[in-house]
Image (cartoon, rainbow, N blue to C red; front, side, top):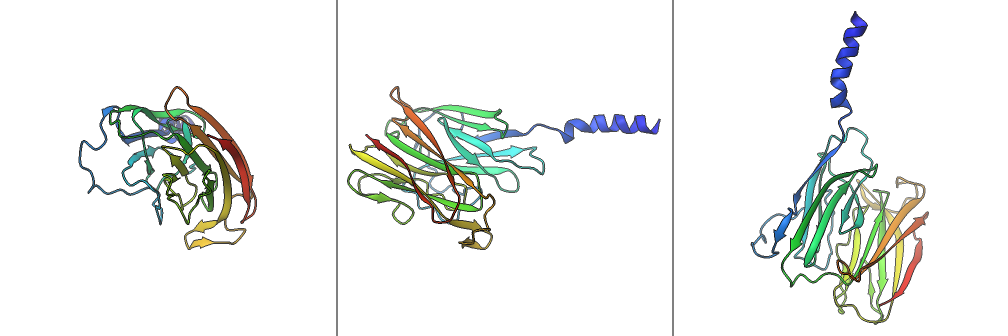
Length: 263
C-alpha cells in the first residue's frame, strides 16, 4: 500500500520534474514596426550576461530580449537564430537574455531553439523603416566555451583591419557587437561593401572568468574550442548567400585563416 502511494505521488510530481523548457521573447514583438517611431533613447540597454565592454560600431540597435524557463540544474546552451544566423544563447541565473542586433528593413525573424534542436519560440516582424539598411556582408562568430575569448579579424580590400582594438573602420565596416564576455557573438557588418578581396581570421585570444581576463591554458572549460563562423552575403534578399565554417582551436594564440572571398 505504501509503495503504491509513493508511486502515485511520484507520477503526480513527474510533470513538474520533467517539464519541458519554454522561452518567451519580449523584444522584438511580432508584426509591423517602424524603428525610430518611438523615442527609446533613455531606455536602459543592458545585455545578459552583461559584457564588461561593448565596442560595437552601431549605437541604434535593437535589443533581443527574453527569458528561458524550466531549464533545471543542467543548462546546455540553447541557440538564438536571428534571420537564420545561429548564435549561442547563454543567460543569467534567472534565465534572462538580451543581445543587440542591427536589423535591416523588410522581414526579420528571431527564433529560440533548444539544445536538442526544438523550436521553443519564433517571432516574425516587418521593419518598415527603409533607412534601416540591411547588411550586404555579415560575419558571425560564436563558440562553445563561455570561459574562452575568441576574436574576429577582418581585412577589407583597402587594407584596413577590423579587430578588437579597431572595431570601426573608415570605410563603413566594423564589429557590431564586439563580444568580450565569451561565448560571443561577435559580428562584422558592412552595408555598402567595397569591391575586392576580404580575409577572415579567428583568433583564440585568451580566457575570461570571474577574475577577468587571463592567459592560463587550463582556465577555460573545453580542451578543444569549437568556433562557428557564418558568412552571409546580401542578407534578407533574393540574392542571399550563406556559408558556415566550423574551426577547432586548441591553444591560446591560435590565429587561423577561415575564408578568403571576393565581393
